[in-house]
Image (cartoon, rainbow, N blue to C red; front, side, top):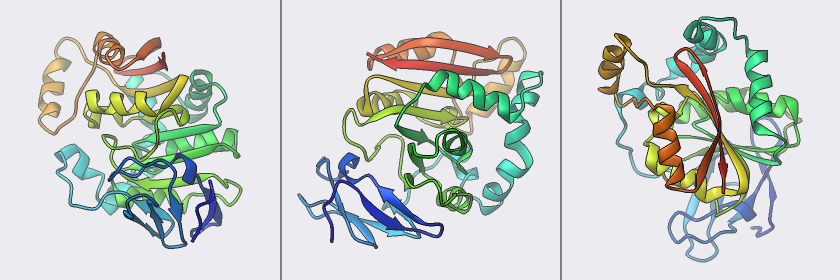
Length: 272
């Protein structure tokens, strides 16, 4: 067993470094956990979080999922999301040429040069890979509540990404200590998450001056509002700029940039 700040963790690609000093026990709140090759555990209360195929399992009990969240639990979704949809999604939703390299450039423009990033609702790791392709030594923690998409993300992991760790966890209970990360990113997942609880957790784990970058569907106008009302029955939420400004201000997140591309918005919020 080890209580070092970070330890090599075996997975299917290579030994990645598990940032134990940043991790927070969800049972007692202790920050700074320990690990073996098969588990992460809390030295204070003894709570155990299994390491299964290199992914840390923070979720134990079956979850109450919305219909929208349930879709991502399907192996078919995990296989097809990036192969059939994600690389072309922004071009289709914005009505303009928006290839992945343009999205990547915009992400880095909003992100700056962080050393530690949480990818919230990482899915199959699309934005995580954009970060790591640009800066492979960055510590990137990919969090999602779907086991199957995390397995797909792991399959695309590269051996020269030594600090890329995947968490099976929830946005409302992020297993990181207060003020531990430089940035949080959320690419096409914020609409599926409870906004107030998610932003509160984002604010808690961000260092002062840290940034939260989100790409999401914004509130539509006119006849399209009817479509959003139907989609809201599946658990999806849609936000205006004012919605995000107000929700962020309540937890110490200040809107810095807000860009719209037809139905899509990309935002940068800064921790005060």
